[in-house]
Image (tube, rainbow, N blue to C red):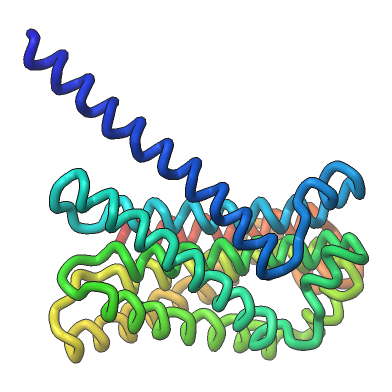
Length: 284
């Protein structure tokens, strides 16, 4: 009985340590954001009541959380070494997330000044898209750092592969739509923003799965990542299309999103994409 109680207390003690570390990581990530982007969270949220900024920084913190969890579930050595590894990977991952955010803003939404739209125009559509971008990046980085057998170099290479996947497939989706997604985001179309956000987060989830393989040599692991990522994203796009037709068979999705600016349909499309990507997550 004493041994059982001791084991329970030890487990709770270790959990408490990691919760405290996460609180410190959040404070550090807030400091990083303020230094890099010249943001003042208190001013934006409490003085300017900027809802768009609240959505955006919420996405940033969720992305940080995803990275922290990815660091937590990595290979274990002993308590002290695990804490050092978790902190190092988490802080490194946060630094890389800033790079991902810049790449996504300029590589995917280059005609929309996302941060300006959020801070100056309080554009909620832009904030939703940035939330999705940050969360997708956080998931992708979490996938890169959680695998076993490769170390920091493997994590960095896997991140680069994942970032290419995220940009290429999101740009491809935007390019082949019948309407100008970037213009719709600039104009504050929340329905379109939800639809695009669903695709980005879903692609981020799938990339996380694809690059989360344990390291088995560069050649074999690279082939597995490319095949898994391509097949699963293709499945996401195809299955999501048919789910939309199944759920709203008598309506044209693009018309509802662009002409009617139907937020309900945008949220539904977001949920459909998320459901499909989570289904892929559990199946693969």
